[in-house]
Image (cartoon, rainbow, N blue to C red):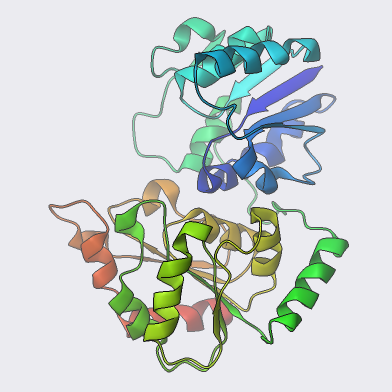
Length: 321
């Protein structure tokens, strides 16, 4: 039997889908598991032992009616028996239907019920996204002790040499940016948290965030702080992050990655988002100031209320676990 899974579209959500992937073989023990995902999240699933085939949708082929039809029809030769969609989009259900899959399982949303053979009701109460995905296979919990990201020895050897070439020892990963501006660290708060620190910092982010990273470096009197924004692929960044002493993270995909890899991680949340999208790594400390979010329900006031004492105590907490 062949079982396909349509991945979430964002890195953070892809990370939160890993408990589902870890359990898929328990649900379908003798099946070939096929993962279908966008290119920018494919690094999350690479080398996963429960995934037998990884089909990556190229950049530029993930939008529009024609691309949707072409993607769905291109899957017909796979002869999929069961197809799960972890996204709630109408597009993903259309692709499932066009694939010719016999069973098509997903949540009822965005008028997609027409294309599903098993229609799962969305949770009526707030539930963590990792558990929402598991609901598709009628599970309510997962084993957090399991491994979720799989890096090989060649990758780790490369990462160690790369960090050494940068002249850093036991670096701290810093993820100050987020796709949502209101979840990005305010410049003045970063200075409050790290200025004068004896740690070595590596700032991760996209190429577009390189200028912002440069400003952080200029405003903080730290001997060892460098920007890696746009320098590495996501997979290479995952390797580098896995070798860090700990991570300080905004509400972002990179924060989810460091947490689930097992790197001690301090993540900052507001707007009551951590209930639904908080990191699921075992050694992660979430600083959540959502009580300050009334009535705005955004992150700005939450982030500005985080003190150096909050950060220092959280670092001590994750490093002693």
